[in-house]
Length: 84
Image 1: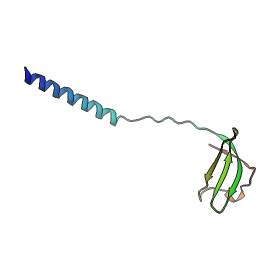
Image 2 (image 1 turned 180 degrees about the vertical axis):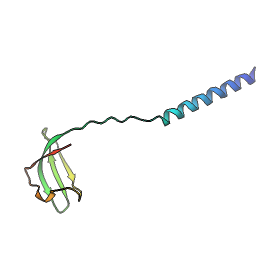
Image 3 (image 1 turned 60 degrees about the vertical axis):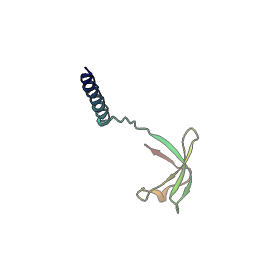
Image 4 (image 1 turned 135 degrees about the horizontal axis):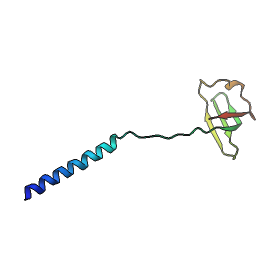
């Protein structure tokens, strides 16, 4: 009787272990949405390549601008830019 209990316990433990591994390997689903908004340029630092932007609610954020950004040199304080 003891050996049946030990074997049954081992099978249950193995089943639980495999179930946990299956959960880890399960593909995950990532959901995303596209948000588009208009931001105002408050400040520009062309030497360090960053801009300070403000959204409609008044939230401001300093954003670094990469070398690949087009028309960075044409940007002026007060410009409105569309981002998504």
